[in-house]
Image 1 (cartoon, rainbow, N blue to C red):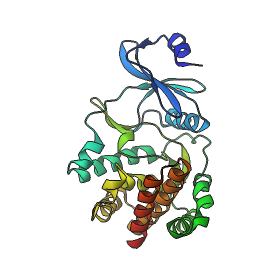
Image 2: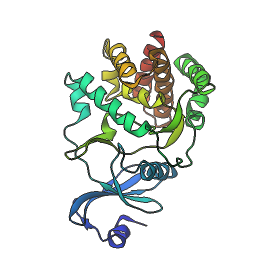
Image 3: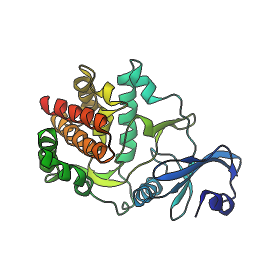
Image 4: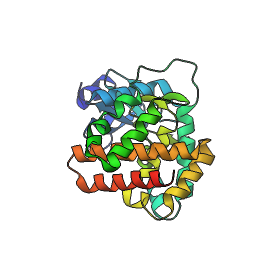
Length: 264
């Protein structure tokens, strides 16, 4: 159903203009005299993320008030304060600690079995196709293969955990939105943090060394394995950028990958 259809179906009042992303339609609404966000997925990937949000049941994530086959009615969160703004204004450590806390909420054990989600091996297909170009693509693919064949601490993952996907609630603190929904090694969810909030910032002298050490301490991860995931994920991100014709971003992602490998 469309946004308009869900407005009627769930008795919602529009509270701002509709927002269209490549994979979803969103609209701020009022529901039972409280602010909420209506999200209607337009891709299978986004529907998987919706399933994960429902399963997480408000623990570390925005609360789901209602859900349908392709739609969620979510707790509306605030865009300020912004973790990206913190990171870019000299408060990188502060932002990273919040992100690690958000990840802990996502990764904590639940009594109910998780939804049916794809594993990371499928997620890395684009890098497998790009690795024939050699260089950092081939290096990233080799690292990914070594990690994927021997996964550790496997659990449901967000899949796209970064500064823009952790927002603030005055009542409940920092909460996660927009998961992709994957199954795999817990450390993978931290790799994208080190490629954000911008690739330029990720490549700042000393930043990867400092933030990877902080994440390893905060999240209880092996730092070398975390850096290996950064090397693999950044190469995968470069492959996605190439598919989208974003050559400059692809080259920056490859630089992050090469930097991560150099620290191993």
